[in-house]
Image 1: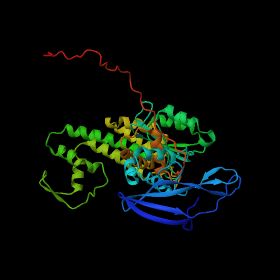
Image 2 (image 1 turned 90 degrees about the vertical axis):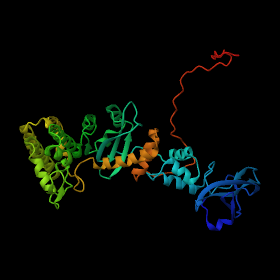
Image 3 (image 1 turned 120 degrees about the vertical axis):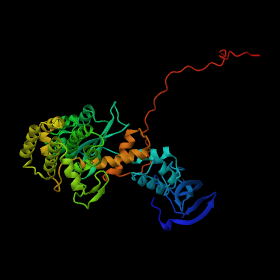
Image 4 (image 1 turned 135 degrees about the vertical axis):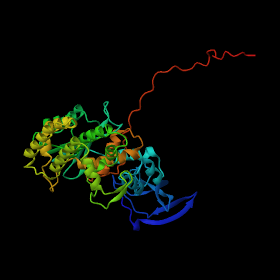
Length: 447
């Protein structure tokens, strides 16, 4: 029943014990019994109260005398349809709708929502379980796979696996862990025709991801996230920089420069040609360019390592997909010829992931490179949701709300059928009850 203004006969507003009470009387309507069509008469009225939205921070209640009628022909009784709230609910439709919308706020805790609408936390969680139904979304054409550390991970793991749609820029799904067993079980349940529609897969350098991608996505081009490659490269350069610093006397100019100004070799955020400033260590005015040049003259191996690092970074930033195979092979050769110990593992990485690194230069949508940048961005929002969840361990409840917050295709649905995702609590272990009839262990003198 839709409540319109012409169906309201009277409204009285009272404030009782700091709560607004809206006493609503509806207009009387001639009603026929819906089953036999017989005429009806009023049998009784029964007071129904619904918690309503707050006004200026003051809670309110809707009080309504619900009419119960009796059919004069068959003697059956029935109640008037309810325009204020679902059957067996204590909250009005407006409150239920507002709670469902509040759950979309990724910064709102269950306690925040409970306090706002004057309900209990378990009730908010029950409504979340009932109103947020999160089915599996179809696999996207451009799939990103990443992980996020969480105590909710199952089967002995430490990470949840995150699927994102790189084309629509939304969260696609969250799996309870990132193991090959869980990924295989999940993808085995998806029809092959759907998996074959996946044309691009981006992932970080977790070997099971690549194995799964090649096994289940036969038509997909698998690419590795370029940020993770750069991260390994930076760590390798840091290793030689720190080793040279630790071998320098303290407080020599080399130690000072490598300790204080190493960011000049690791970041592009500095304007090297800034105005000179007085440097207390060298007792003269220097700008960033002067300090940068000093760093590059400290050690030939450091200079060579820096030049190799910058060569790869330039390749990563500006190379085209067509030129990537040739340029990457050249860079691998340059790293091998330098024979620097700090890059041994990085060279192996480039060779092992060569095909996937080359695929990362493909730009299939909006001139955007293949990467896990979207997954990393969504992971930050998922971490925010974890932070406001205060140690939530219910994975299914968390998954449903994360998809609701981060995928516009998931809507809430107000339903009178409540269902809970509450987990079975761990059973208590065996213990022996204390028998009060046994003699006391108190051996003190009774006198």
